[in-house]
Amino acid sequence: DIQMTQSPSSLSASVGDRVTIICRASQNISRFLNWYQQKPGKAPKLLIYATSRLQSGVPPSRFSGSGSGTDFTLTVNSLQPEDFATYYCQQTYTTWTFGQGTKVDIK
Amino acid sequence: QVQLQESGPGLVKPSETLSLTCTVSGDAISTYFWSWIRQPPGKGLEWIGYIYYSGSTNYNPSLKSRVTISVDTSKNQFSLKLSSVTAADTAVYYCASLGVDTTMDSYYYYIDVWGKGTTVTVSS
Image (cartoon, rainbow over all chains, first blue to last red; front, side, top):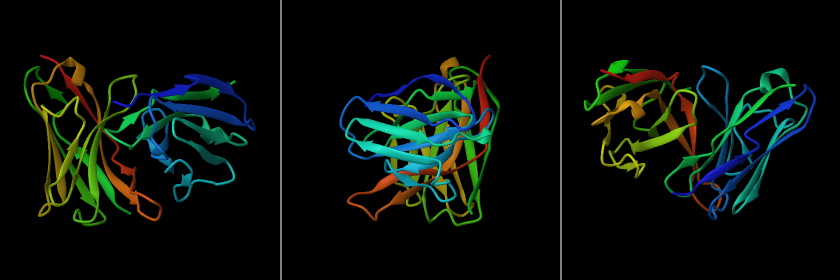
């Protein structure tokens, strides 16, 4: 299986901050990488697919994704109160696997 | 937009079979791929498998020997069966629809719409 490792596992930030979450694959997954946001007690929500394509309704001014191969990044610009959540990356190159999650909480 | 609702027993005994159903509304099931994902308490997400409405499936190899996903187009539902369960199978189980982007050089799948999730506890 391809292992997905996210860093950091958690971070504290303030409203207005820029946040960067890294997702590293144990082998080359090209651009088969998705990002999800999950709030407590809720189902995850798709943010980005194919590394950098924003799901409909996701504000492009705040969320962006980049990378290829084994290293990927989710960037949240100007963090808003509704962005405090846990973020997961997922590879769909083969036998889909998720990262362990990155919890973003309020500083 | 498609909506999904999981249903099934919230408590299953060890060694028995977990059975869940996902009811699809807002669109025909013969349109998309359909998937199950689970999340143990306080932990991350695990993909279980997916099915196309035609019946073709793809399962997580770590669960493949115990998992069956099926679709009932007449009822607009798809189902999950997980046999020989243990406490490690205790989780919130989500059903979901898959999207696929074919505009680039390959088929890029993603989990598009999620159900609210249903908690299944394995305990005697």
